[in-house]
Length: 271
Image (cartoon, rainbow, N blue to C red; front, side, top):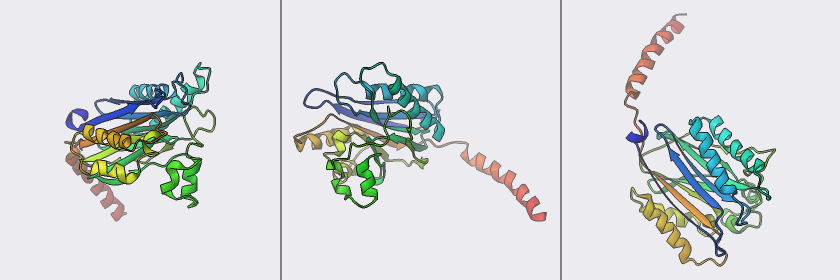
């Protein structure tokens, strides 16, 4: 019901590095009342490692079984992915950075482990951005490193939280964020944020229409035009919220709540 009366559009691009390796993965599911979007970046770039895809598939599977926006649901999905990577029969230890976004088409919440990133825009202007679980980001928080130098800092991939970590896994889960029509959410792996700064990404959203594909293409064209020498595999996903769900019974619910609350308040006053 909610999905039918809202308009969320998604586009993404994902490419391998110069050695034809791509250990990124992106996937999403849009149900009647909830949606979930997941981006993962395999930390080990070995071609045979399936960390990112396994993490994405596990999160979407767990979410689909009992969809909700509760903080506990997000943690459950991320912990399931962590367990899946730990229990994999792969000869190598599977590890991945993951960001997942859940929404009820009215509000949004995200969970994160690692240094995949989320950025949110409103009317083309930055509204919020996620924080990496890395030593470099800690140095930024302590004002020992300039934010502009984060993308090339030696410890940017030195993570203290990631999927596949095992014990001590404590992912970040955000509070709920109210959505507005024309909001946009960007999900990006290190292949993007190491080569494009926030100003360049903002420009891609400034003149955006209601279709995320041109914006996605613009970001990729800008990335490739810079011809970075050590370009890694990269993934960029854009989610455009063109119309949020409006509850047709909201006014009635508010009126009913007031009618219940007023007598209670009167009794309290009298007492």
